[in-house]
Image (cartoon, rainbow over all chains, first blue to last red; front, side, top):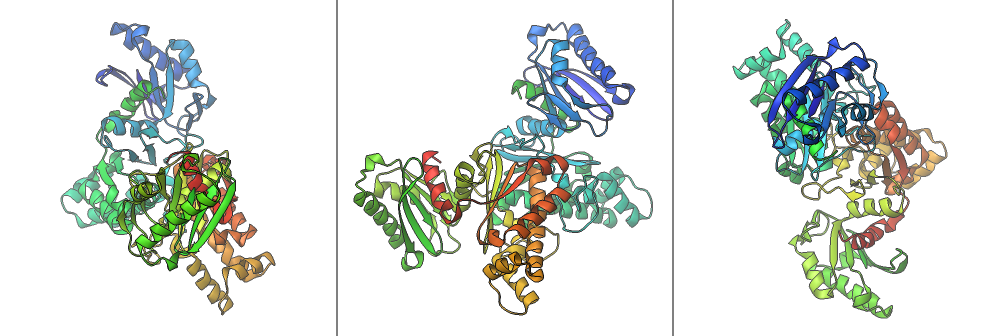
Length: 300
Length: 300
């Protein structure tokens, strides 16, 4: 059983051992007003899904959850959620295990998306990968030698908060000139608004770039340049063999990806630049669910 | 047996199983004009040292070598040495094993210094550490979860080639605004020359800073600011628990270290900043030899 909790949607899904999706239920997260109600919704959905598929507890390996915030994966504790109020140091693993009588595994969504792309997606066959999600925030997960690289507090992969200049815009995290302050969705939209002198969605910006619009191409090329600068740091430091880029912005397509590859080829060290390949994420919006399912199989 | 080959000195040493130094021989590297002569000098020194200490081949675990350039540690091949001519794709492990009849382990010097600080020095007890050497170049080694993190081609840890700005000085590596272009020894000396309007050694600069000289303090504070900027990227990406800083520049002392800690505290994400501690390297100039000895014990 896989659960993907986001600020907008709660998804619950049942997979077989080959990671084939058997059933998926999607809820609006905001309808669950309190922590208790939200946890109840998860357990109800799991029981209901197992019930009407005729699957008994003993046939289930466990429940994996992808969560939108900092998690102690080992102890199974949610520290807090930036976008869902009312959660603070919640022993969610313990609560769910007691209620469902199944082993439960927690992790943050960026880690699980990285795990999914590593096992079943664009990073398959690689050994040293970063998987990046471009959205309002810019997050990432690191897979090193086949395992998630968690660091001291399960807080690795924050490529969005690597400063790419010594001076620049202030970031919500308290830092200065973080990558996210250049290529977070809102920043891209604001930059495009300046160039086009009107509101323009990122979707339209991608369509225009594909049709050859010079201003749209400039926007994505600049996004690629900023992201490339951070990735030069990452590959020189970590000698990766694979970079996977997903999230809405990854739809910008060729202009963006070509620019990123160009920056790495020109600016990174020779060995590091030659070792690394850059791919678009393959698993789309179900990557989080798949990663949660995989985490059950790997028992972490 | 441990060997530390540098552009200036070749050191060969004998350690007991508690890493106590039994004997050390130091040679001027430049007297060995060819690759063959240099290899011969290593094998002669090893044989000679074992001989007059009355130690037989069977009492020796193996020979570890720290080398000043990119190495394929697994295959035991030296790709090349930036500062010693005549080495290209040399199967050094095989050559030495044949000649010495002992297991031989190769690695680059930055990795071995990191390993030594991790096992016996300032990073002892940590689990996610970077060990940085400040010199003409700025290098580093990563220890993750107790093991050297090597990446695809054993080329991790190049913190000196993380760009800290999108625009800035060109670097020898082909990149732009790499950390090394701000805080490599020559760059620090050039910056100091400007402020003092005369040639001034880094040693003097450290002494002056300790005595409260404003200009010297400014130099080290700026070095700390640049290095801190790169370290903010590193800790946000890797959630380290330990940063070890060695090499001549680390003697600058308090001003430098306080500035680095200040930048991390102010600019890095809260969890990552709280998790990490910054130490001065403890093992001094024999760190490379110790790391080479440890690599034999660890068989890698």
